[in-house]
Amino acid sequence: MEMKPRTVGNVAVLAIEGRFDANTAPAVQQWLEQATAAPGARVLVDLSETTFVDSTALATLVSAMKRCQQGQGAFALCGLRRPVLMIFELTRLDKAFSIFVDADHALAVLNA
Image (tube, rainbow, N blue to C red; front, side, top):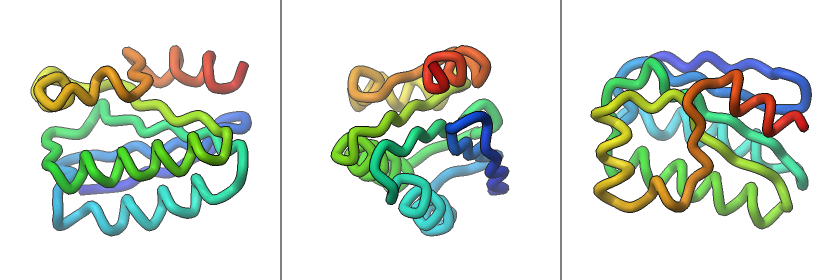
């Protein structure tokens, strides 16, 4: 897995490439904890190059989303490939997250 963090406007963006699983989740969790620490944080996780997610990855994203919401911020996902999207649909997490087709659409909403 490779993490590619960047900032676009007032949104912290993390692109995750490869497998996002129990082995790689701690690094992502650490980044997300820092990104969601400030009140009003706006965070986008780009999963367009993510090939697999497991329950640990899902839990990492859910806890970051909750932290963001508690601080009156915004948290979104984008670019989910079909196999990854299917996992979100099976767990019904597709209803819990703001999911965008791509980063451009997500950033337009988060930076508004």
